[in-house]
Each structure stands twice: as structure tokens, then as C-alpha cells.
Length: 341
Ligand SMILES: NC(=O)c1ccc[n+]([C@@H]2O[C@H](COP(=O)([O-])OP(=O)(O)OC[C@H]3O[C@@H](n4cnc5c(N)ncnc54)[C@H](OP(=O)(O)O)[C@@H]3O)[C@@H](O)[C@H]2O)c1
Ligand SMILES: *[C@@H]1O[C@H](CO)[C@@H](O)[C@H](O)[C@H]1NC(C)=O
Ligand SMILES: *[C@@H]1O[C@H](CO)[C@@H](O)[C@H](O)[C@H]1NC(C)=O
Ligand SMILES: *[C@@H]1O[C@H](CO)[C@@H](O)[C@H](O)[C@H]1NC(C)=O
Image (cartoon, helix red, strand yellow):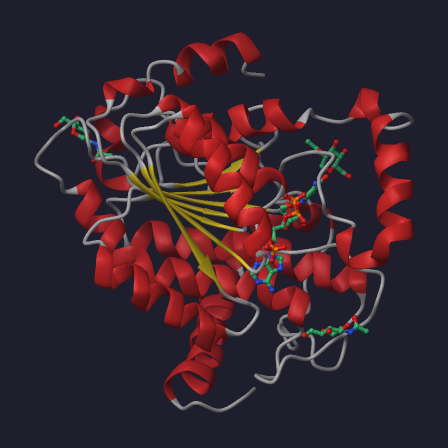
């Protein structure tokens, strides 16, 4: 476990980076995304931060707060419902018009639901889209800008990382249905959790090979008291607020600490890109158990998850190609052909 004081020492060294790091927080208007953006802004020189979400009231409140914390920061809100992949493309287009490099893509979009499959107009389940497809579309569309950041001739500006916050552990216990990856016919909330977990795990292994100058982390936040129950209505949210802050408190990570720990996950050198892990002291073990392979499954406390028989079996049965092949098909149908799956 990386102690909180070690996390703080690391984060307080981030002023080492040259001014002008660019970070995109997809789901930056609440919870872990917001808390991480706040610590990032506090810890860096003149960062340029984009917050992507739907709620302009929260966004403007947050932007005021972050501006006060670090007056040298530049903050932008992009309002979009990114459960639609065509909206993801619009957001990426807007960012690409303004930036030629991105140092950090940090993704937390999603929500908790007890309801069943809910199809978007593009034919994907809304929750699986937010937890997987939309995130990987962001990663794919912005990967060239992440590579540009990695190749910055200024060695104090070459951070280049993608972090997707969900849960790498579910798919160490359950295997997805490779015949129905988008859960058209076998949807259940349990399957949705398993699929999102496995698909994030293997997609980042694909990205680490395709974009070796950037590193890719799938991080488990543990229980964090956030707005995650919002979509369950005011009653459930209120109950969660009380129960979360009392009964579960001893088992939960404080929101500010979660932000600090996710800034660590977003910047610590041991989660190195595949291309330069050789030069990094103490490079972490990648999800394929190879040191410095560029894709990392992180627990809330900064440790990588150890080996997994289940994931190893899936890997040797071609999980990465199956999952990425399926994902490209979905992107093609929706984003290139303008259709639905
Ligand atoms: N909190 C926990 O205990 C916990 C535990 C395990 C895993 N996780 C996972 O960690 C991730 C982050 O959780 P959190 O607790 O930080 O959640 P949260 O407080 O509910 O934040 C979710 C963020 O996603 C955005 N969002 C949701 N739907 C969107 C949409 N259709 N389009 C654009 N933005 C959208 C929200 O912004 P707007 O409201 O502005 O749209 C918000 O900024 C989630 O995937 C969650 O499943 C959380
Ligand atoms: C399905 O998603 C839409 C938004 O796309 C939302 O308005 C609706 O309440 C959701 N339905 C259920 C049953 O969750
Ligand atoms: C950044 O530049 C330094 C110094 O040239 C190099 O050692 C390091 O590997 C580079 N980091 C990345 C992420 O490319
Ligand atoms: C991962 O899942 C296993 C099996 O359910 C469990 O024993 C372990 O504690 C989990 N690890 C974490 C860090 O949650």
C-alpha cells in the first residue's frame, strides 16, 4: 500500500512539471472526477483542465472553486451527454480544435442503477456505454494528442496517461459472455459489471501496445461517498448520504483522499509507458504480469492487482482481440456509418 503521506509527498512534487499540462476529466462535474481535478489543479503549474459532463450549474461552481485554488489554471467546461458515441466525437473534435497535446485523460463517467437495459438511440445500453464504449472512444480519438504530449521535447512536460476508474477486480471473479459482448440478449446488472470490468481491462492492453508512448491505467476507487446515487432520485440519494457517511464510513475512502490518490495514479512514474519503462526505476508490473508493459490494473491504495488465473485464461483465449475487434465494429457502425448496433 502506498501511504497517504507518500501520495502527498509525490503530489507536492508535481510543480516539477513545466506549466501548461493539459488534462481532460470526463465526468469532472462530480465525485471522483471532480475531486481528482481539484487535486490536479492544486498540484500543478498553470494547468489547462477540461471538465466534461452534463450539469452546467455544478460545472460553474467547480470552475470558480478551482480558479480560486490555483489562479494560474485555465478551466473549460464542455457540456455533453457522452452516453452517445457521436457526442463523444463532437467533444473530441472541440478539444482537438483547441489543443495539439493532452497529458492526461481521466474518465469516471457512469452511474449506479438498479434498472435493467436502457438502450440509447445508438443501440447500446446506456450504462455499458458510459462505463466502456464512450470511454474507449475518447481514448481512441485523443490517443494521437497523448502521443504528441509524450514526445514533447521538454522532458518536464512529457506526462502522457489515460486513467479509467471502474473496477478491474470483477472480471477476476467472473467471465464475460464473449458471444454477446454488448449484452443485447443477456443483459443483467451483474453481467453489465463483469463486461465493463473485463472490457476495460483488455482494451487498455490493446492501447498500451498500439500507443506505447502513453500509459493506461484501470483503477478501482473502493467505496467513495459521491453523487453516484443521484439517478436513483432524491430519496435514495438522501438515504445513501446518511448511510454512506455513518454505517459504511469506516470502509470508505474520503473524497479528498480519493482525489489525492487518483492524482498519484495519474502521475506516478512507476506506471510507465511501455516505450520508456526500461528507464524507470521500480516500474510497476503490467496487467499481463510483465514489468512496465504500459497497462496497469490499480487498486484504490496505489498497488497493482496481482496475477489472476481467470484473466490469464481469457488472455490466452484471445480476449484482447475479441474485445477490441467487437469494439471497432461498434465504433464503425455508430461513428462512421451513422447507424446503430
Ligand atoms: N463511488 C464509489 O464508491 C465507486 C465504487 C466503485 C466504482 N465506482 C465507479 O467510479 C466511477 C465514478 O464514480 P463517482 O462516484 O465519481 O460518480 P459520480 O459522482 O456520480 O460522478 C459521475 C460523473 O459522470 C458524469 N456523467 C454521468 N452520466 C453522464 C453522461 N451521460 N454524460 C456525461 N457525463 C455523465 C457526471 O456528470 P453530470 O452529472 O454533469 O452529467 C459526473 O461528473 C463510476 O463509473 C463508478 O461506477 C465508484
Ligand atoms: C433511460 O435513459 C434515459 C436517458 O437516456 C432516461 O431519461 C430514462 O429515465 C432511463 N430509463 C430508465 C428505466 O432508467
Ligand atoms: C520524459 O523525458 C525524460 C527525459 O528525457 C525521459 O527519461 C522519460 O522517459 C520521458 N517520459 C515519458 C513519459 O516519455
Ligand atoms: C478482488 O476479488 C477477490 C475475490 O472476490 C477478493 O477476495 C479480493 O479482496 C478483491 N480485491 C480487492 C482489492 O477488492
